[in-house]
View 1 (tube, rainbow, N blue to C red):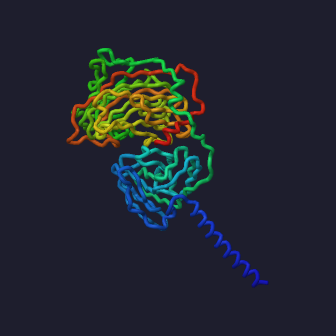
View 2: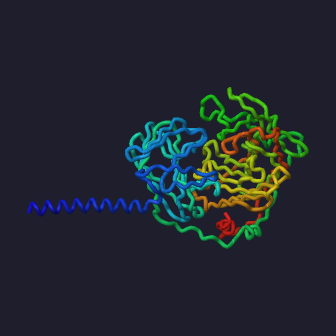
View 3: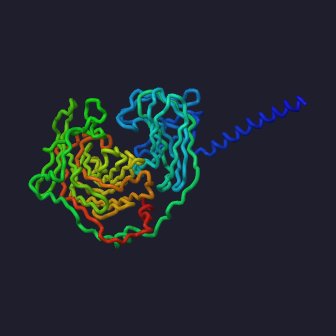
Length: 474
């Protein structure tokens, strides 16, 4: 009898071990990413210029913008020793790619992590430059000093991306331990089918009526409409130094660098020195906004402008910020970049939306002039058409980018309240880089007018959830 019990115990123990192995193998099969348990060596394959990376089923430690880190495997986990967190949130990234995310699928991320001083991390799955660094999910976590399991769930609302990057950003100086990363599919949601209606159909039921305009016909800038933002940005970090407008910009904004000339608003960037809170800056320019003076909500916004000559570090923008930014801190307030231009790409502009999920990378696309043409050659119309569930970006009435509520997701859609306008010409920054010996000064952005229209036709295209032709192209 005792021998029988002993044999049964041995068999039961063997079965439990075997079941555990089978469960672990099944869990590994469900895991979309590789080397989540860090049993293999890290990859040495760094992202290319467009951000594409193939880490061969493992992870690579990637740094930029001044980040300094030492990463290695320790006791079956990944350990990072961060000595300088860098200038940007994404300065230090543990990264894997390519990862295939399918439209309409539900996903769950789990991982174990700790830090030595409640450090922060960002979990992001997103695109490379070919899809404008779009974030499909971006979530912040504050780590405990004890190893804990963290979880993130999301739905892939955008078009399937076979080249997704799985990124973990390490935000603070100190030590991190990360292990048991799992990304698995947990279900599927019914996505709205691609419609047969296109923008041409929608245009047939739009009747735009001009409700407000700024033609810049006065002799001076109208301060009943425009505010000047001055200096190199507020001291948001409270370290006694301006925070470079959150973008590592290198200019000092003044009132003198904006003026009216021949019925145009001129914003001029110059190479000259200013001091702000003890910080020496080598360029001046101007930044204007309509905050608390004029706001926009839905409709068609047209800005006719001639962009600067260009060169490394030149960064003009025509954009909107949520008027609730004082209580809904960016990116919760929302941002719509009607036009951004990087001076080293004189024939390209970008249109982008930023919300709580897409955040810094945003959801964007570029518009490119034919080879040999530049945006500084003549005036162009930069246009936003905006309604309850869609943002449409145009150059000279040519549609080049659409951000749809169903595509972006409810959590990222914060474009349902008033926004105010900003016009500025930045010099230097984390995106455009900094001027070099080839960058000419002074440079100007000239704005002919800002016009705001509302649609007076109550009809709409109810089943035009997004633009099938556009989606196929982009």
